[in-house]
Length: 291
Ligand code: G4P
Image (cartoon, rainbow, N blue to C red; front, side):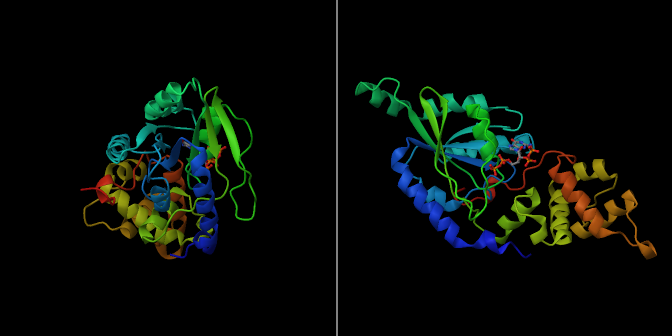
């Protein structure tokens, strides 16, 4: 699969890394927003190392699109790694109210230390990080009531650092610069492409859909059976399932062959649009650090 060369350009990440390093001393905690459907692939592992010494909170966002049983397991996994965790659907606002109390709980010793020094009601500052498309802007807007339009996430578009107040004693640092995902494992790129975080123009649609079908056939066969009125048998590979679904939909080209490209686009659209159901595409047990 060919991935966007821009996405690979390490210079952007270097800039972002420097910015994170220089701002860390100005914040009390770091908040990472991740996509609950791909909680590992939607993180940049460099951030883990960079921010390891700060109290950290993870927002499992897009829970409305993820498998809720898996979200519970991911929340437990992050807690085990020492993170505070909240589950959110920033689009509808679900779960965002838990954020401020969760930050205060995470920082309760720090708050007590500030108070012991006479700094009652001192403003807590939290750096918010997330790769594109996890819902970072939507989350910040929801939690703060900010109305401003989303700043552009494009290389070359300069964004300035923004402090966004949540309430009288909590401020977010909306980080400029783009936090890229890390594509060392090719599966990471594939999962990001499934969710639409990587633009379709740069990937092979049929290959992508075939891999998605294969995953869904193995892990969520009932969802495919219901949506496409087909029967999944254990020996069906992704390609066979695309053909079965395309045939059921009547997507045929000359000679009675299935228009697999059309079916591939439909599958990806329906998957991303939530028409197939709620899915989590990676499991905590496959993550590094899991014993
Ligand atoms: P980013 O800053 O991390 O790049 O992401 P952003 O907030 O711009 O969100 C990207 C898209 O994801 C937006 O949709 C947004 O509405 C949607 N989104 C964010 N959080 C959630 C969530 O928790 N659940 C769901 N289902 N969607 C979420 P869009 O199609 O680009 O815009 P719009 O049509 O919603 O305005």
